[in-house]
Amino acid sequence: MLHLDGVVAGYGAGDVLQGVDLTVDAGSVTCIVGPNGAGKSTVLRAISGLLRPREGTITYEGREIHGRPPEEILELGATQVPQSDGLFANLSVRENVLMGAYIARRERKLIERRYAEVAELFPLVGDRPDERAGNLSGGQRRSVEFARSLMLDPALVMLDEPSVGLDPKALKVVAAAIKRMVEAGKTLLVVEQNVRFGLRMSTHGVVMESGRVLMHDRADAVLNNPEMTDLFFGGTPTKAPSPTASRA
Image (cartoon, rainbow, N blue to C red; front, side, top):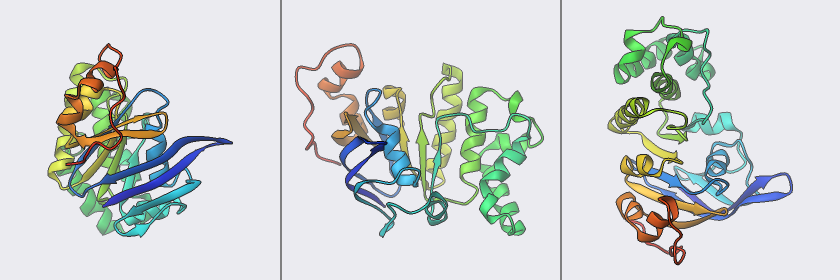
């Protein structure tokens, strides 16, 4: 579905991504983990068109998309939910969700059908459409953001740090929402600082450091890799993981 080949990208004169190779298969949940500054979120920005790669190619559903504007990539079926809370606190749940279909705003029947489908997938949207978004908990707000991202029926949904700032109770709400998206047939590419949370809900894991992919394998293999355990859970690895680790 999605393939990055030798992608170099950055901000100003500096390169954050140093030749990233990455493949995301249709129907998978791929989680990118790594220390701060590894380039995880920059990968999502390059895919979604918010950042133009300096080198390399990005192919989505057989089409090269690097350099295309974000709205065109969105229309092709790839959407991103940013790390920051993007809801309008003074607007209702329904109003916030409908903003996800802004580029199709003239197609009223389509929008109403999509809203009904999203409301079925996320009960909060159907049960509390008139609730002010500012009254919702952190996990509920994330669920509304996910619902909004599905209004154009994308095939690929990219989530940037969906667990950031959430307590354990809210994490369960977010995990349940992500599970519903998977059950609805969406392909997910997730960036996470919470390594255990991210990898346990994923089929594949990617480890990045210093703008490069160090490991790409099954999520359970990444989570149980001794070097990764040392790197993320309190120790110092004796050696770096092989960048040629095989994918499942």
